[in-house]
Length: 153
Image (cartoon, rainbow, N blue to C red; front, side):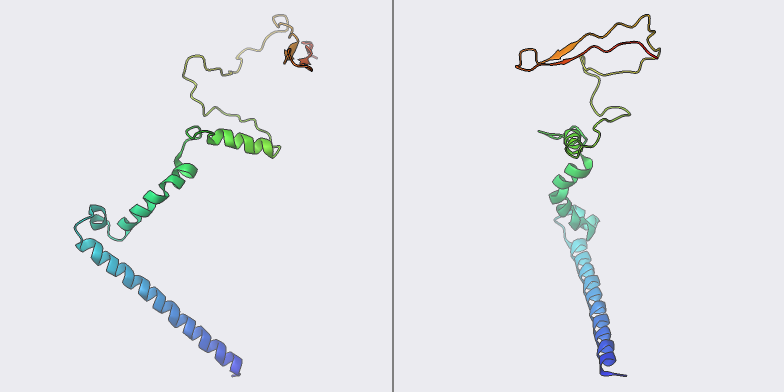
């Protein structure tokens, strides 16, 4: 066996022993924490859930981040909620911003505008011709959308 092979074998043995030592220290630490938690009388959570109960305080600290990314509803945050931010991000990337299949808005308040499908299509004889729409009539250059024809086919 060459010197390099012996050196590599010795290095692997040292790393394996170090790994077992670190795992042993971890297990010993968990056992010590378990004994401390079971015998203490100040915190019921740590006594009832030894070792795992210690994560409670860490999770309380991280609660703000969990609520922000996982638990908050789409329209709960202020000043800009997740739905608005998502729409802006899609618009900034030049991606289609339309969303189908329902709404995340509360549609129960009186006066809420929403669109529904027409169960019966409007007949051509009943249709009303659209009129011109002017946006910004008081502006120096208003935009006027011309009326389109209602003839089909």
